[in-house]
Image 1 (cartoon, helix red, strand yellow):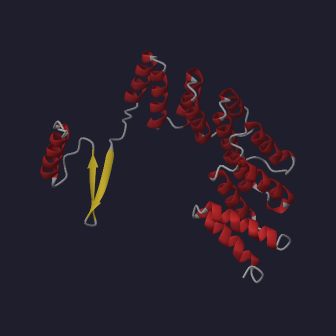
Image 2: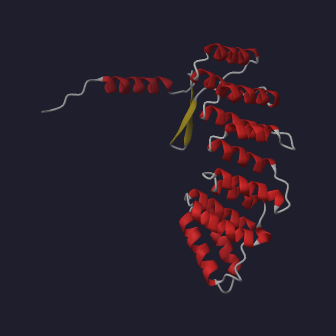
Image 3: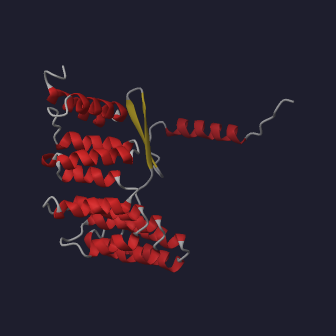
Length: 260
């Protein structure tokens, strides 16, 4: 079949990647290259999928080999594969940055906000938060919610409290009513025991009438969805449910006797 319709195999490789069957995808891709190197010309969607598989398998060495192939096949090098290459090098920040800057210098393409977000995430994962902030503030295009949100999450992860406050303020300008941003900032202050700042953030939330969504869970029983929301008592079988839960709770608390 490979000789009759090589393009079909490219589609199969991509499908395996999308189905998270990464090892099989890479094995088939290698077979296609080995057997029909000149004739097998995967497009950018196949290459992006292959790079995703390399990333999923934590195989940076293999990813660099695929990178080399992508560069040689210049016609398939696009922003989709660029994003995949950045993800491959997430653990090697400098190498990832080199690839990012080659987007414009070597390939003549202007980076998109999606690609800038990848680099911000790349720097953040490497603990280089100040560099990530400098990049965001020096962009030739206006930073969006995704960029500032990625940076705020990085500040929380790496305990950059003061920078986190600055980043959060930028987010508040763009989406003032997103309660998630306020919660992240409040948690950031709380982790640093800055309780006055925590109270300040909570006052901001109250003034804007922002409330954290109630916890919710559901279960399907006999093809019927049963939804439970914190503080809600509207379920028609609530009496039986609460009685059963109370019984289970008492049983759990009963002391257990072990036989010698």
